[in-house]
Image (cartoon, rainbow, N blue to C red; front, side, top):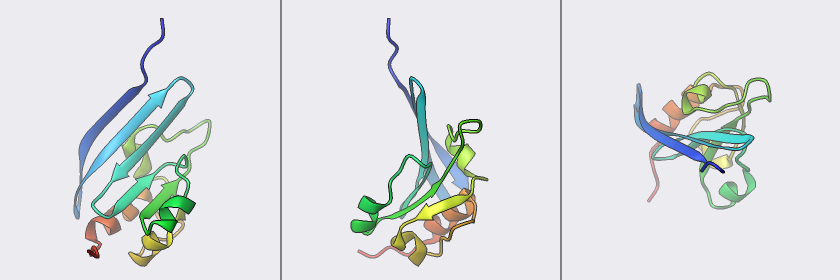
Amino acid sequence: MSELPQTTHRNLKFNNGSAIGMSHRWHKGQYCSILTKAGIVGCGIYALDTPAEFGQAIAIAKGTPDNPLCEPEDLYEATIVGCTPQAEKIGISLGMTGREAVELMLQAELDD
């Protein structure tokens, strides 16, 4: 009997507002992300080339096989290892924490 994959989401509170935290798991795999009004802070499963082409703000952190990023809260202290040019425009840079990136996304002024 096979089990369905699991997905959860919940509201997360930050200094600059709220975001949606998501976790997705399946046999031998998982990913997590935090969705804000301006973009996504996510784990290393996200590629950056396509969202960059569409002008989207994406920042990614990378877990390891011994310490995977499974829940959105795991991103809080994880180090940002990649981001799109749009994420850089709102102040996100490599080496900051996922929490810092989320806070900047929550502060971002959005173009219409």
